[in-house]
Amino acid sequence: MIRAKRVLAHKTCMLAAVGTSIVFLISYVVYHLRVGSVHFPGHGFARQAYLTMLATHTILAAAIVPLVIITLTRALKGKFRDHKRIARWTMPLWAYVSVTGVVIYFWLYQVYAAPHP
Image (cartoon, rainbow, N blue to C red; front, top):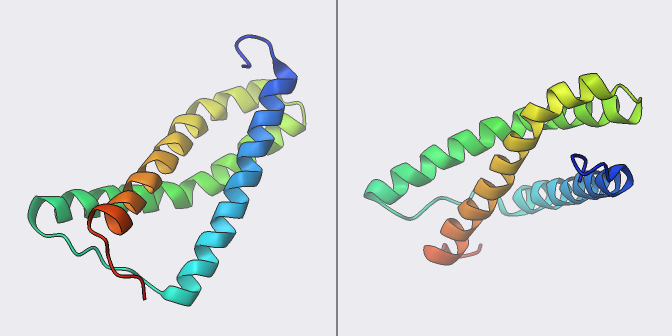
């Protein structure tokens, strides 16, 4: 949207993405405070693939929080050159965290159907 000069649409979508992410993060933390850790029941290659993806997802999920805050703050302050420079890193990392989060959930709760406590 921003490349098409649709600034208001870009701003609206990005603020909606941040808001949605905040709601998700709160629900994720509350869920895991109540349920605790859920272990992956698979074995062999599937377990190694899962743990590798989980490790990269977890590290980048922690890193993405300050990146999003910095990126959003620079945009809201009108520091668009600085915003653009960091957004080039934030966007693909945020996308990776989002996609791997869904894949991890799918593997853990759908494919291997870990019992819910």
